[in-house]
Length: 69
Image 1 (cartoon, rainbow, N blue to C red):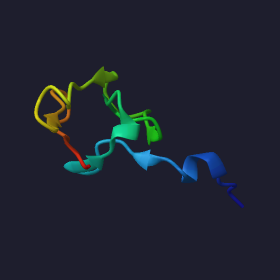
Image 2 (cartoon, rainbow, N blue to C red):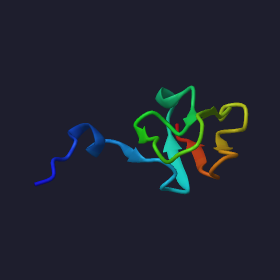
Image 3 (cartoon, rainbow, N blue to C red):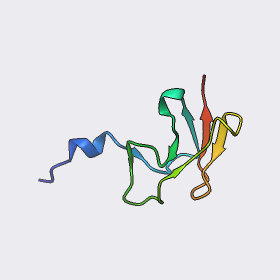
């Protein structure tokens, strides 16, 4: 019988979505975000979402982040 890791069950798959809504509590914004499983992702990059008018796109994976306020 395989055992599941409870910590892994709470992670968000990295790069699984094309659009993520984030809030100011998520700043500074990085892709992948904390809580995303990183084993198959790209290096962490910080995205200047506030300087870009509330939307930012990751150059590595194309994920679009939208600041929701």
